[in-house]
Image (cartoon, rainbow, N blue to C red):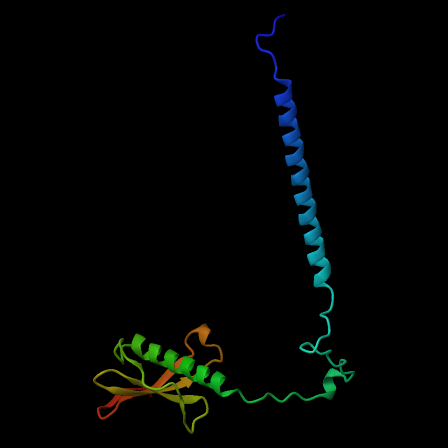
Length: 166
Protein backbone atom coordinates (compact mmCIF):
# COMPACT_ATOMS: atom_id res chain seq x y z
CA UNK A 1 0.00 0.00 0.00
CA UNK A 2 1.38 3.28 -1.03
CA UNK A 3 0.45 6.72 0.41
CA UNK A 4 0.29 9.31 -2.27
CA UNK A 5 0.95 12.22 0.01
CA UNK A 6 2.95 12.51 3.14
CA UNK A 7 1.22 14.01 6.19
CA UNK A 8 2.59 17.30 7.50
CA UNK A 9 3.01 16.30 11.15
CA UNK A 10 4.05 19.76 12.50
CA UNK A 11 0.93 21.32 10.92
CA UNK A 12 -1.29 18.62 12.44
CA UNK A 13 0.25 19.25 15.85
CA UNK A 14 -0.47 22.99 15.52
CA UNK A 15 -4.10 22.26 14.54
CA UNK A 16 -4.59 19.97 17.55
CA UNK A 17 -3.01 22.54 19.85
CA UNK A 18 -5.41 25.20 18.53
CA UNK A 19 -8.38 22.87 19.00
CA UNK A 20 -7.39 22.16 22.60
CA UNK A 21 -6.99 25.90 23.33
CA UNK A 22 -10.42 26.70 21.85
CA UNK A 23 -12.00 23.83 23.80
CA UNK A 24 -10.39 24.96 27.06
CA UNK A 25 -11.57 28.58 26.54
CA UNK A 26 -15.10 27.36 25.78
CA UNK A 27 -15.12 25.29 28.96
CA UNK A 28 -13.91 28.31 30.97
CA UNK A 29 -16.68 30.47 29.51
CA UNK A 30 -19.31 27.86 30.39
CA UNK A 31 -17.99 27.62 33.94
CA UNK A 32 -17.98 31.43 34.31
CA UNK A 33 -21.59 31.63 33.03
CA UNK A 34 -22.67 28.92 35.47
CA UNK A 35 -20.94 30.69 38.36
CA UNK A 36 -22.62 33.98 37.42
CA UNK A 37 -26.02 32.27 37.30
CA UNK A 38 -25.51 30.72 40.73
CA UNK A 39 -24.29 34.04 42.15
CA UNK A 40 -27.36 35.80 40.78
CA UNK A 41 -29.70 33.28 42.37
CA UNK A 42 -27.85 33.40 45.67
CA UNK A 43 -27.74 37.21 45.86
CA UNK A 44 -31.45 37.48 45.05
CA UNK A 45 -32.31 35.87 48.39
CA UNK A 46 -30.08 38.12 50.50
CA UNK A 47 -31.54 41.16 52.28
CA UNK A 48 -30.44 44.58 51.10
CA UNK A 49 -27.48 46.03 52.98
CA UNK A 50 -28.22 48.72 55.53
CA UNK A 51 -26.87 52.09 54.39
CA UNK A 52 -27.68 55.73 55.01
CA UNK A 53 -29.94 55.72 51.94
CA UNK A 54 -31.52 52.38 52.93
CA UNK A 55 -32.28 52.42 56.68
CA UNK A 56 -33.56 49.23 58.31
CA UNK A 57 -37.30 48.77 58.24
CA UNK A 58 -39.18 48.85 61.55
CA UNK A 59 -40.31 45.51 62.96
CA UNK A 60 -43.66 44.24 61.82
CA UNK A 61 -46.62 45.05 64.03
CA UNK A 62 -47.97 42.22 66.13
CA UNK A 63 -51.54 43.56 66.07
CA UNK A 64 -54.21 41.30 64.68
CA UNK A 65 -55.67 42.29 61.30
CA UNK A 66 -59.08 42.98 62.85
CA UNK A 67 -57.61 45.42 65.40
CA UNK A 68 -56.96 48.17 62.86
CA UNK A 69 -59.27 50.28 60.77
CA UNK A 70 -58.00 51.35 57.37
CA UNK A 71 -59.25 54.73 56.25
CA UNK A 72 -58.55 55.39 52.58
CA UNK A 73 -56.67 58.60 51.98
CA UNK A 74 -58.20 61.09 49.59
CA UNK A 75 -56.76 60.78 46.10
CA UNK A 76 -53.95 63.18 45.26
CA UNK A 77 -54.70 66.01 42.88
CA UNK A 78 -52.94 64.37 39.93
CA UNK A 79 -54.84 61.10 40.38
CA UNK A 80 -58.12 63.02 40.61
CA UNK A 81 -57.28 64.92 37.43
CA UNK A 82 -56.53 61.66 35.61
CA UNK A 83 -59.86 60.23 36.77
CA UNK A 84 -61.66 63.32 35.49
CA UNK A 85 -59.91 63.11 32.12
CA UNK A 86 -60.80 59.41 31.80
CA UNK A 87 -64.45 60.06 32.68
CA UNK A 88 -64.79 63.01 30.32
CA UNK A 89 -63.03 61.19 27.49
CA UNK A 90 -65.39 58.22 27.87
CA UNK A 91 -68.44 60.51 28.00
CA UNK A 92 -67.31 62.40 24.89
CA UNK A 93 -66.68 59.12 23.05
CA UNK A 94 -70.15 57.86 23.99
CA UNK A 95 -71.80 61.06 22.74
CA UNK A 96 -69.80 60.88 19.51
CA UNK A 97 -70.64 57.19 18.97
CA UNK A 98 -74.33 58.00 19.31
CA UNK A 99 -73.97 60.83 16.77
CA UNK A 100 -75.03 63.57 19.17
CA UNK A 101 -71.73 65.48 19.06
CA UNK A 102 -69.46 65.70 15.99
CA UNK A 103 -66.56 63.24 15.86
CA UNK A 104 -64.01 66.06 15.76
CA UNK A 105 -65.14 67.57 19.07
CA UNK A 106 -62.57 67.69 21.87
CA UNK A 107 -62.69 68.19 25.62
CA UNK A 108 -63.06 71.83 26.65
CA UNK A 109 -61.76 71.17 30.17
CA UNK A 110 -60.11 68.32 31.99
CA UNK A 111 -62.37 68.50 35.03
CA UNK A 112 -65.76 67.03 35.79
CA UNK A 113 -68.43 69.10 37.42
CA UNK A 114 -70.37 67.35 40.16
CA UNK A 115 -74.12 67.58 40.38
CA UNK A 116 -76.62 67.10 43.19
CA UNK A 117 -77.32 63.57 41.94
CA UNK A 118 -74.93 60.89 43.18
CA UNK A 119 -72.97 59.33 40.31
CA UNK A 120 -73.88 62.05 37.82
CA UNK A 121 -71.18 64.23 36.28
CA UNK A 122 -70.93 67.01 33.73
CA UNK A 123 -68.12 67.43 31.20
CA UNK A 124 -67.57 70.18 28.66
CA UNK A 125 -66.66 69.62 25.02
CA UNK A 126 -66.04 71.99 22.12
CA UNK A 127 -65.52 72.38 18.43
CA UNK A 128 -64.37 75.50 16.62
CA UNK A 129 -67.99 76.55 16.21
CA UNK A 130 -69.79 75.30 19.32
CA UNK A 131 -69.49 74.31 22.97
CA UNK A 132 -71.31 71.35 24.52
CA UNK A 133 -72.27 70.20 27.99
CA UNK A 134 -72.46 66.43 28.51
CA UNK A 135 -74.38 65.27 31.59
CA UNK A 136 -73.97 61.55 32.28
CA UNK A 137 -74.40 58.89 34.92
CA UNK A 138 -71.52 56.58 35.82
CA UNK A 139 -73.00 53.07 35.95
CA UNK A 140 -69.89 51.01 36.83
CA UNK A 141 -66.50 51.49 38.47
CA UNK A 142 -64.31 50.07 35.68
CA UNK A 143 -64.45 52.08 32.45
CA UNK A 144 -62.80 49.26 30.49
CA UNK A 145 -65.92 47.11 30.99
CA UNK A 146 -67.74 49.26 28.45
CA UNK A 147 -71.21 50.82 28.70
CA UNK A 148 -70.30 52.60 31.95
CA UNK A 149 -71.49 55.96 30.66
CA UNK A 150 -75.25 56.55 30.46
CA UNK A 151 -75.89 59.91 28.82
CA UNK A 152 -78.51 61.97 30.61
CA UNK A 153 -78.45 65.30 28.81
CA UNK A 154 -76.34 66.78 26.00
CA UNK A 155 -76.84 70.42 25.29
CA UNK A 156 -75.20 73.03 23.12
CA UNK A 157 -74.31 76.36 24.68
CA UNK A 158 -76.85 78.87 23.40
CA UNK A 159 -78.49 76.27 21.15
CA UNK A 160 -80.64 74.17 23.41
CA UNK A 161 -80.89 70.51 24.26
CA UNK A 162 -79.51 68.00 21.73
CA UNK A 163 -80.30 64.87 23.72
CA UNK A 164 -82.41 64.23 26.84
CA UNK A 165 -82.91 60.82 28.45
CA UNK A 166 -86.43 60.32 29.77
